[in-house]
Image 1 (cartoon, helix red, strand yellow):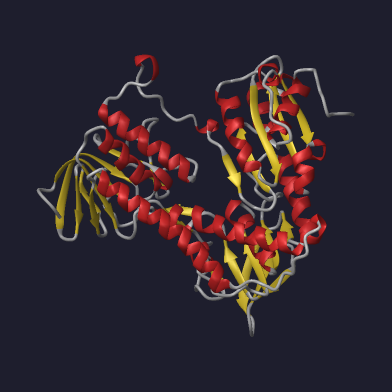
Image 2 (cartoon, helix red, strand yellow):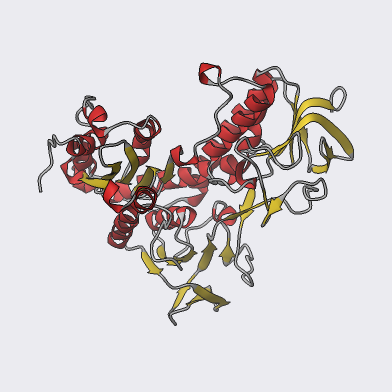
Length: 466
């Protein structure tokens, strides 16, 4: 460890929230120490966003090869070479990891490899030494959760961490949990040739999304041959001779080679000294205010450690917010830095098809504004030329306050994640449909679907009929 151990900012955890905070703080002239027990980049880069999307793209290539004849292309699908797939996946991760290491060095951030523990309001102990900062940021992230009594053995009963390292394609798999992680792995495994069954206790897949999106994804998964059991909770699992047998509360059982436990992620906070230092906690999460300040002055927390959306881009935003708040930086118009509007954060499930959304669901909008104050419009991708070319189906659904702005945008279809950027601007700038309807969208693109939905809500539909 170079120099003395006194810093302007000490960050415990080098994942999305931690390193974003470090980068911004260094830009603002602070002397920063970044403590990480594994690799900078955290879950997102090494065990989450990036590797899963690499697998999903490999699955997309496999599906495109199988379906090549639809496009007049003579191609033959011979199977999945998992060693080569993993090499591709790890190569992507490795290149991005090398880039992050370069940024840490270029910004003169003191990177300390080791498992840190908060020992006072301004001190983290790591490798037997105390590292002190004027401010401390807790960014220790999350880890896959399980259910009471359900032991993840890493062999037949696995977490997403294990799933990313599989060196074979399972012939069959049970996915316990129909949220984002479960649906993404179900999608990629089906593309690889696995017989997949999802067990979800709630009534719909991706249950936090607009119900229309959930139903469209369920329909698409059914067409793909992905099976699911909805509205009945998992009740137990036992080992069979060659795999596992899962039991459901409705009395059904499902057998498969393995079971992926995808019931969410929990905060990494136990044994790290948080409570002893006086940091207020709730069910393992660190409690914070709108500026990510904990109950202890000078101590902040960001990312999956706090009870906000568990998304890498949320971690980035929280890390940047904290660095700017500590620096006393002013926001627009010389006002204080603005807290994050979590309704204004884009959300994407990168399954096939993708589910992307912004803002309020129809149900949330009606709860907030009243049933008679909200209207919606669903634009079917069947009317979109580029979607026809891609042979994808789905919808763009817009939720609007009557005579007011767009409250939510919910999209299902291949590549819908690429439309969420425009949706983000529409929602966050509180645009009226008639304002967006004036914008000319390039043809043929899938972004036209957004324009068509807004034109219809503005009372001048184009490629739409009853």
